[in-house]
Length: 79
Figure 1 (cartoon, rainbow, N blue to C red):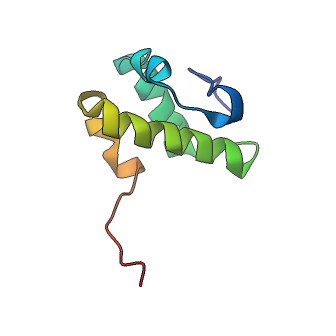
Figure 2 (figure 1 turned 180 degrees about the horizontal axis):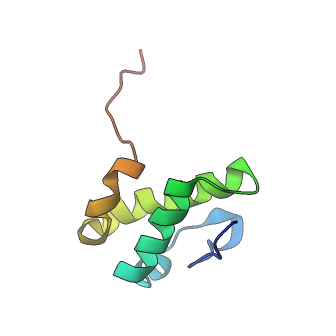
C-alpha cells in the first residue's frame, strides 16, 4: 500500500529551497520509508522521491545522514 506524499514536488518536478526547508526528521523518515518499501504506482514516482532525498542529502545533510544508503551515490567512471 502506497504511503501518502509528505511533500509534493512542484511544477515539472521542481525541487526548491522552500520545499527542502519544510523537511524535518519525521518527514524525511516517511520519505525514506517509502523509498525503502519501493511500492510506487509508477517508476517515476519512485524516481521523484529518490531525487528529493538526494537533494536533501546535498542541502540538508544533517537530516539525510541516516538514509544515505537509499541514495546510493557510489562513484563511477563514465568513460
